[in-house]
Length: 169
Image (tube, rainbow, N blue to C red; front, side, top):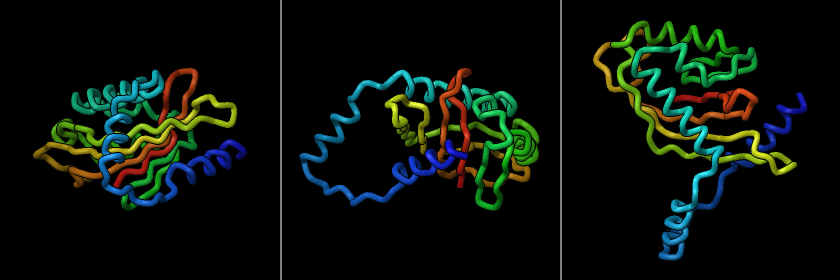
């Protein structure tokens, strides 16, 4: 419970609204410099895991796609019409929504933003990732949506980065 309370506080900071940036040459230069910052090993690991997810999806392998989710009853998926708790229920949701490779189509992610969240001791233990998804496909099962946005809460575990919370709309 304590971890979730601390995590909730961290999420408030991550998703708190900010004032819109002014479009000035100085801000444009700052944005360009920020984009040139070296990528951390943690961000590289998360992006590599996302690449593995895309590869698994595109070969029609939902269990391999789900390998990046924490295999826990606390793992949560929030969709446009339902909230699922637990790795197994989320896996079953994907298997029902995408019964075969044609219904899965080809997945791409874009506009990925990885924000590392250090804990009070300065160690990075969590990350918030947002982006867009697109499915190029011609067949449909229960899942009809081809495009959308997502936010993921990741936790660094001994077995690598794992998704604790997936909000996809």
